Amino acid sequence: MTRLNRTKMCGEFNAQDIGKEVAICGWIAKYRNLGSLFFADLRDRTGIVQFSISDNAELMEIASTIRNEYVVYVKGTVVSRGTNVNKNIPTGEIEIIANEIEILSVAETTPFVISDDANAGEALRLKYRYLDLRRPSLLNNLLMRDKISKIARDFLANEGFIDVETPILGKSTPEGARDYLVPSRVHPGEFYALPQSPQLFKQLLMIAGVDRYYQIARCFRDEDLRANRQPEFTQIDIEMSFIRDENDVMDVTEDLIKDIFNKAIGYQFDGKFRRMTYKEAMSRYGSDKPDTRFGLELKDISNIVKNSTFAVFANALSIGGVNHGMVQAINAKGFADKMSRKDIDAVGEVVKTFGAKGVAWIALRPDQTSSSFLKYLTDEERDAIYEAMGAETGDVIFVIADKRDVTYKVLGELRLYLANKYNIYDKSIYDVLWITEFPLLEWSDEENRFMSVHHPFTMPYEEDLQYIDTDPERVRSRAYDLVINGQEAGGGSVRIHRRDMQQKMFEVLGLTEDVINARFGYFVDAFRYGAPPHAGLAFGLDRLVMLLTNTDSIKDVIAFPKVQNASCLMSDAPNVVDTKQLDELNINIKTVE
Image 1: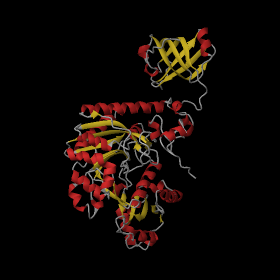
Image 2 (image 1 turned 180 degrees about the vertical axis):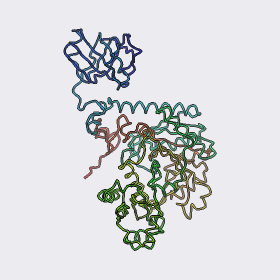
Image 3 (image 1 turned 90 degrees about the vertical axis):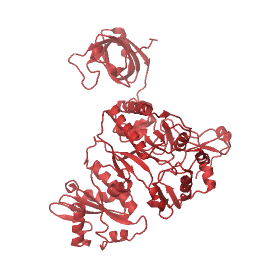
Image 4 (image 1 turned 45 degrees about the vertical axis):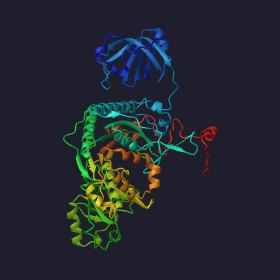
C-alpha cells in the first residue's frame, strides 16, 4: 500500500502550485470516463480539486473501476487548466495530472447523492448522517462551529477567564425543564441527573476563588424539541466575581460577541448594543426576544374600545386580575396590496395555532375599506383607532382581544409570520439587543405557587424588595438576555451572594427547609463561608452557529442531532437494553398500555 503523505488538502491548491509534484487523498465526488481520458473531482472537507489521467493504460485500467465515493490516493503534477477555468471553485485554475493512483476503499451506491442540491428527505439524511456530513454546507457549518469555539476560548483566556470542567453526573434539582436521569449501580434506587447547565457548580467556583471561569459545556434538558432546540446542547458558559453590577458581565460578553462576528464572518457592529427592558419589549413586540429588523409594533387600543358593543372586545376587557384582558393591534403598513381577502382569512386560521380564538381586522384599500368589526364602532372610536395606529390607505390592521399573555403571544407570533411570509425586511442584517429587567417571579397554576422566571439564584433589584411579599410579580430581576434576530442567543444574571436574601427567595418560592436541604443543601452550605458578588451568562453555541451560518435549523450545526421525538435515526437511540443491565441497576420496566 502506498505510504500516505498528502501535500495539501484538496481545496488548498491554487495557481502557485503549478509545476509541483503533489499527493492528494479524498472521496470521488464525480467522474467522467471517456475511454482514453479520465476526469474526476476529489473531495475532502476543504473542497474539491480535479485530477485527470491520459495516455497511461495502467492507470486507466484502475480508473475504469472507480465510482462515486470511492476513497483514493493520487500523486501527480499540478498544471494549469488554461482557458478552461472553473470560476465556481477556488481550485478552478488548476488540475492534477495523475501518474500514480490507488483505491484505498470502495463504496456502494449511496442512498442519496452527496450534494447540497440533492433532493433527499431529512429523515433519510439523518439515518445516514455520516454521508450527509460530506455535503459541503454541513461540513462548513462544523468548521464554523470550530472557528467560533476557538475565537471564544482565545478571547476569554485573554480576559483572564480559566477553563474549568464541571461534572456531567450530578444531583437532580427539579426547577425548570425535566432532568435526564442516570441510574446508579453502586447506589441502588438512586440516580444522577445530567446537567441542564453548570449553574450551581460555576457559582461554587466563584465561592472557591476561581474569580473568572468559562467552559464550553455540554447540557441536557428533557423537553419538547423545535427548530432551535435539542435535548443535548452546548453552552459558552462564563461566570465572574467581584462585579459592581450587571454591566461588568454584559460589557465583556458584548465584546466577545463582537469579536466572534468580526473574526468568524467579517461582520462588524457599530457602537454599543441597544438595551430594552422586558416591559418595553413585551408591550411593543409581544416577545421577550423581539426581532426589531422590522416594525409591526403592538399598540394597546383597550381604552379606545372600552365602551364598544363588539362582544369580542367587551368580553376580553371584562377579564380582571394580573393577566387582565386587553385589546391590542398591529398595523401591517402597505399590506393591502399584498393581501387578498383570502390571505386575511388565512391569518384568522394562523392565529388559532398561536392560541387565539380568531382575529379582527380592517383593510384600508384605495377603493373601499372593509372590516370584520367596524360596524360595531362609533365614528369617534374608528377615527381614534386610525390615529393611534397611524393608519393610511393601503394598510391592514389586525386586532387581538384576550388575556394579556395571549394578546402578547399571538401578536408577537403574527408579526413574525407576516414579516417572513411577505419578506419585508433585510435578512442580511444582524439585529442585536439586550433585554433587561425581567420579572423575578411568575405564578404557576400547575404548581400553585410562584416560580423563578430564570432560576432561584437570580438577584432582584433591591429597590423592588419592598414588594416581594405583597406584590411579587412587581419585583424585577437583575437578569439580561442577548437577542440576535429574534433568537435568544444568551442569557444570564447577577447572582444572589447573601445568605439572607437567598433564604428569602426560597421562602417566596414556597420551598420548605427539608426541600431546600434535599435539593440545594451543599450549595446553600457554601454560602456560610464567604461568597463574592458574582454574575454570569451563557451563550447557546449551537444557536450562535445557526445564526452565523444563516441556517434555519439547529440540526444543521450539530454533527449528530436528534429528531422531534428526541431519538437518533442513525444510531437508533434510545433503545432497549439487556435484562442483565437492568438487573444490575435494580430497575424493573413498567409496561405502558
